[in-house]
Length: 238
Image 1 (tube, one colour):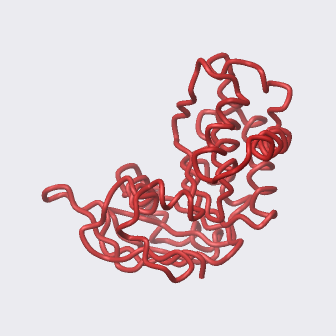
Image 2 (cartoon, helix red, strand yellow; image 1 turned 30 degrees about the vertical axis):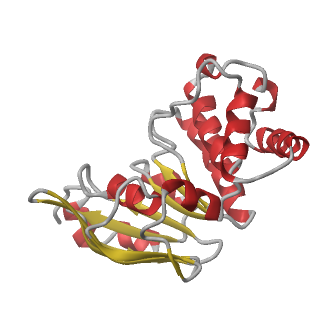
């Protein structure tokens, strides 16, 4: 297993946002997470990425306990994250934004970093926008830039937070294709998404969260068709 979460719990006062969550992620796997608003999905990403510390439980990367590691150390070890609302450095160019990601996580010579960033921009469909200010990008290209910045850190585990949200159907399909290609290159994914058909096009295992607890896990289509998920997640009792 590349990533293991063991009995992670986190509370804010009386509100328990992660309740003994245990999950495993295999090398190169694509794992999807769904659940209603407030289910604890983004909190879980904050725990994995290090922005939040759990009250109890453990996080292991390649068998090594990283529960106490800083976000920077986790990024250097191979954990990267995109955010639901892209917030690039708007006055920097697209290329410069990606270069920041490359320099943040790994120690590279400038020529190596520049070459790597050019390849990432090509891979994510942003090469033609390389010299464009990030603040002038469309929503789709901002989402692509989120992917590109994360890829620049050379992740082995990539956390995608509702990356298809707000896009048209055609834009969503383009982004799904990019995500699938990233996964097929060997990067393990955990993808939170409300647009379920986008998720099902990529992931091979699905987890459902509700009130901070894992309530279902397994084959994506079987999970989404289960009575429990229909009642709790979709609000459609049989």
